[in-house]
Image 1 (cartoon, rainbow, N blue to C red):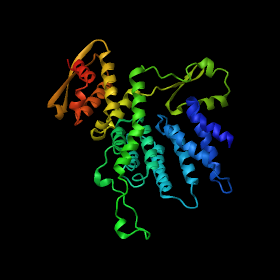
Image 2 (image 1 turned 30 degrees about the horizontal axis):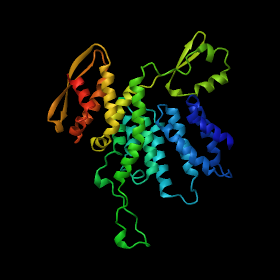
Image 3 (image 1 turned 135 degrees about the vertical axis):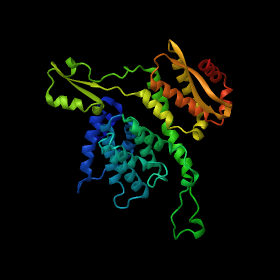
Image 4 (image 1 turned 180 degrees about the vertical axis):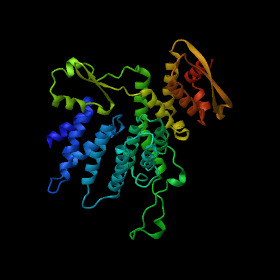
Length: 377
């Protein structure tokens, strides 16, 4: 059991060995499901679950898959004698996530892929009214945003955004009838799921937006270091068994396998943090986002500064409807050769702010007003 604890710690303490550690934990935990096996320690289940949430956001299919399998075993072994509604909801969500993750995704299977994603919306049965199941769904959907298939992005973004702004009629959770309560109380709604879902949404999105913003704007496209870039150090005179283990490190499904005359070379594909940052901004909705201007305004200013720091600026005219400020056109400068993704990011951020009802009060901030003036001149 001590071995299991130590290996599980590698998932967060040693990112390069994350996938291999998850694979080992996955296989080891399956033995606890066999008849006559000892009970899974409660402290391991609680500590492991808390740390593995971030693994669901991984860009790696293998990391997400093993993490989902680990969660399924842990919650499947819990409360086997009398399974609670919360545990049943979690297992239902995990089943939907595994259905999406195991599907071989291509242009022909997009519709089939989006069906389980659709059932991860905040108002769906199994998610609505169950915070742990909702957290699992939300973390997993953020991991799916890394999928490099454009046609899937809008469906995933809508599923994430559903936690931010639920229609009021979809949020009332009613208590089941009980003989212990008067009939007049059975229809009384408990805490509105709309507010709970929104709190969960921002508790996850806030750190992700800040971290991904730093990755996207502060690092160059080549900043993602390849974990296996030196064939001399990694592969020359290396036994076959060791090579197989090294292939399970980091993000194996993100690796390029290159056969060279002096041996096998593995280089890691860099994650497109810029495109991922665009997707995160598109997951925001104005009604809830306008209450988070202390978070979002600095991120917008960082983006504007990023654009202004480029040389050889040229001017584009972008039409953005801003009802609150009675203007239809925002003119801003972008870099000569500034890629399409950069333009999409700036449009997504400016478009969101233009829909804020409190845009006039935000505009009163001197730094914000000065930045917009520099962009629009």
